[in-house]
Image 1 (cartoon, rainbow, N blue to C red):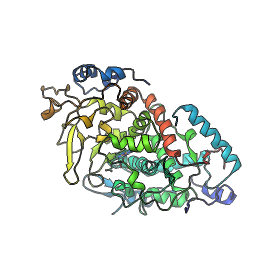
Image 2: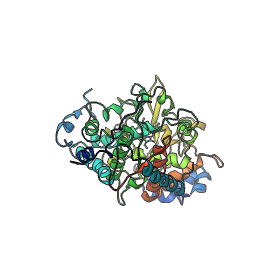
Image 3: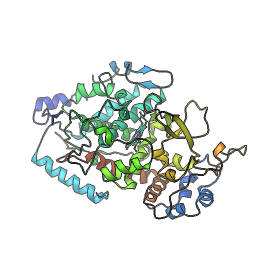
Image 4: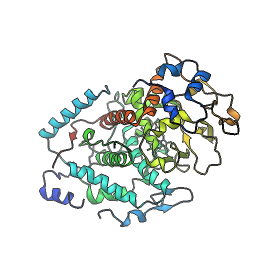
Amino acid sequence: MMTRGRNNACDDPVARRRDRRPYRRVAILTACCALMSSSSSSWDSFVVAVAAQPFSKAAKSVTKSKTAKKLVKYPSTFYFVEEDDASSDGVEEELDDAERSFESSRSAGCVDFERYYQIERDIGEIASEIADPGALAHFYGAIVRLVAHDFMDHDTNDPDQMGSDGCIDWLSEKNVGLNSIWSEETPLKHLWEEKYSDISWADFWIMAANGVIHMASTGDKLDLRDTFLWGRDDRESCPQSSERLPTTESCREVEGVFLERMGLTWSEAVALLGAHTIGRGHEMFSGHYGTWSQNDFEAQIFDNQYYRELVGRAWSPRPISNDPPLSDFTTTEVDDPKPKMMLNTDACLVFDLESSGPCCTRTDLFKTNGESHCQTMEDEQCPVYDEGNPRLEATEAVAEYAEGNANFYEAFRQAWFKATTNGNSNLKRVVEEC
Ligand code: HEM
């Protein structure tokens, strides 16, 4: 396996100086729905009306230089190219191992506190030059999505486990759009080339995403430094990795990627999917267009809005294409130039889409004129999962994270740690000084 990011900056004081230069169980779903000011009826009544049981159970320095100049405006959106155990004990144990491993092998691409936060500042500087709210949401979102596409190809049962290794199958349609954040012409790649090329892509992408999440989080900031480990090797090629990536079709995809191959729980999968709170989907990329959050400003904030939106709005099916057949969910404001969306893989965390035909998620919500938010689907309520269905764990997690940011942040921290370290060994903690 060829590796990248292995110039030993830690062992070379000159290089070092140069590099440092510029540089729970658901309480109550009613609580989460109380947060949805747009709802015209309570979650409770929905629960009663729909299910009568399941939910209640759950109750150059890269400054003004070339970076922003590379942004090219397109009609509706902006692109950056011209063309085991999830407990905190488990995490602590792995972090202790990482400490020991660093002592025994001071290897390359060293990351200390200053450097770790410098990446965040550099990304903040690029972001500060992006004026369009949708483009900024996409800039943040695409960095986080890049990391997810790197780790979602992990298969714990396969001798070739993959995972976070800086390798993306750029030709796969599942990865379309990722080159808007990482290609020769993008500010992020320039940043790496100019200041961080001793660090592997895999490490750099995760640090960049951690920086985004830190900047974009709210209230008690979500600082992932203490659960970040570095020392991943990059892999030059990973044919077939994209076969392991999910489609947007159904919860079978979520199960396959997160539970069966990555070894996560439903709650952890739900925590990771909460990252859809930032960024947006693009017609030209995946075909799914719109934001999961309320608007382009909210889509720049890393908080629990994804869960609140998921349970609080009436989501109806939206056909995307006939060939291949593709659909997702949107709200009834069909003419909204900035539509909102939920993928099937999002909606299925709460609604049993596989055992129903086309349906709407909240037939109990009405507009002020009395019209159903579900419009023509006013009688087609999506069912929720039956008692005993393992997917109820996902529903409970959605409710828990919708209830408070702190719940989401803690769950995300654990799940992100697991997802980004899967398949890697001998990783090291960020050190005080390299
Ligand atoms: C079942 C798993 C998943 C599916 C099916 C899925 C699907 C998608 C799709 C279709 C898009 C729109 C892409 C585009 O058109 O530009 C998207 C965007 C995004 N995804 Fe996911 N995703 C999954 C898991 C994840 C995970 C685990 C994360 C992070 C932890 C993540 C973070 C994001 C972000 C932040 C965006 C917005 C990107 C942007 O603004 O450009 N996704 N995802």
